[in-house]
Amino acid sequence: MTIKVHEKLLLTGAAGGLGKALRERLKVNCTVLRLSDRKDFGPANAGEEVVLADLADAAAVDGIVRGVDAIIHLGGISVEGPFAPILQANILGVFNLYEAARTHGVKRVVFASSNHVTGFYRQNQTITADHAPRPDGLYGVSKAFGEDLSRLYFDRYGIETACVRIGSSFAEPRDRRMLATWLSFDDLHRLITACLTTPALGHSIVFGMSDNAVTWWDNSRARHIGYRPQDSADVFRDTVYAQTAAPDLNDPVAIFQGGGFVKAGPFGL
Image (cartoon, rainbow, N blue to C red; front, side, top):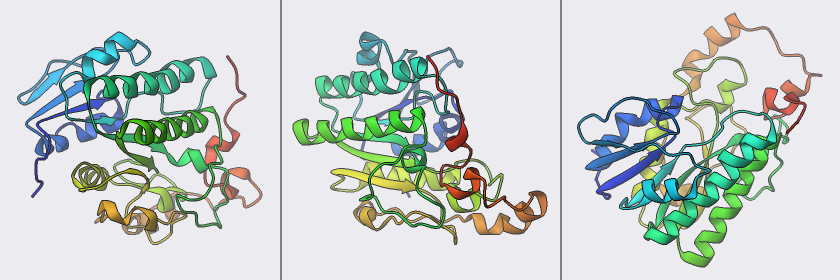
């Protein structure tokens, strides 16, 4: 049973893949779930509010944050690409969100960071939240910026944030890399619930992964959050191996934790 500690939650990026997966799940965490995205994604259902906003529009972001108790921030661009859109959505957008949180007294944020903040660590390494960022592209840089910005807003204004470095959150793992990075939708909800309900969140970095036997990430620095994954990529291992070719161990995609992101590009405006 999930204890409701917040009356109204804001979910940004509600029209995206993870937003859709969490829409029904998050209703047990609150009385009213406010959903926001840039473009129209349909009407509100029972227990919901739908408010459209472009994250680069400070006034619009101020409006969606007003009156909520906590924020799950999934909004923005989630893939590698040119810098200009990433700048608007992921860098200016996260600044607008934290400014609105400060203005309206919101004291807890779950920020969807990414494993691509550390994508240039090798797959034969196990890292903790204490390891320095090594972004694998402009998208990873934008998420590293969000982590640093949220740290500033915690130190200066007391806004607690969980920076969740999401691995690969899909219905099931799609390739051999995801046997290490997979995060089930139910475990993602369990992780967000833990971040919303832990008594003292502070500013925490937590890796978003299920209970996979193979992992590159050590979550020991985030034990105070109380997240315990219940799903595992291991049940998909035989199927994934049967359906995918053995990796080329000389290919950067197979060497670095960021996978294909380490080769995405070229960068541009």
